[in-house]
Length: 317
Image (cartoon, rainbow, N blue to C red; front, side):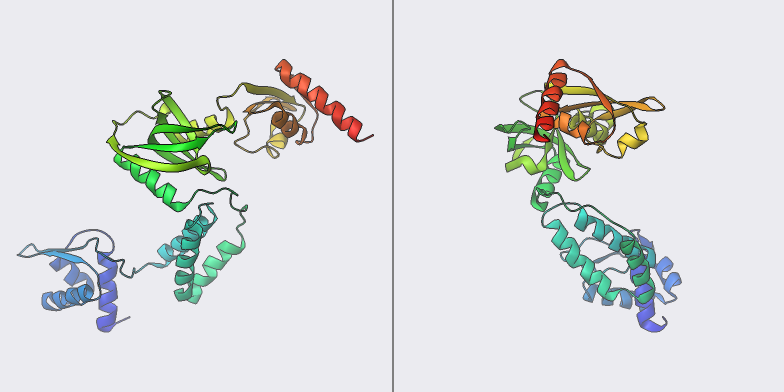
């Protein structure tokens, strides 16, 4: 696109890169005189783009944050990435965020040129996702926890644990992790004086405190791994060990990543270690895999499995 309109679009694209440009650099890039460049900068300001400038021989320009969100100029790749990212956000299982992402997505798709619309439709038509989590956290909770973690503010909230007990938790928030279809908060529990993970959909009455805390070193240096291990092996008195008479590749297809740890013990067998709030959950979960298995322990799980098998046999006549 030539002429003043094309020059303005090119100028805006350069400024939106985030770097600081000298007047000479911008004038050379857009093919304008210094006077025309200053006039174009003023037009951008009139349109709501907050362009900051410094005067003098070494004068410079850069785009800064303003009071309102001005229109953005995106390259083809940036536009496709934005649309794909918004689709993923609408699937992420966050209340309110899905609607906001859908609205932003509709605005973007409305102005996409045909060549980009085809690329976006190709990605969408070949991508599937599970439905959103039934008890998704709301966007406001995510934002408040993120702000508290960034500012290192203490938080307090009501929490329902795995056993259904409700109590108050006082926490130093550290990271939020999306694992599977659930959101978790990793933080330092001030009362238990240890790291804990909390499911966001089990929180209520969140309060961000004005007091602050000193940063702590992440457990193991990796928040995601810690949350994964906590989800697989929560603090629980129910921990079972089962050996499947099938390759680990086959069994892994039937067990979710959060269910427990699965490791091969041979080409045709594997061992599963898991923790849960009840023996019933473990017994039913391993039975649903659909391959022969042996309960290696503990004795309580062996006993419960026998009782469950007898009840099922009687039910089947």
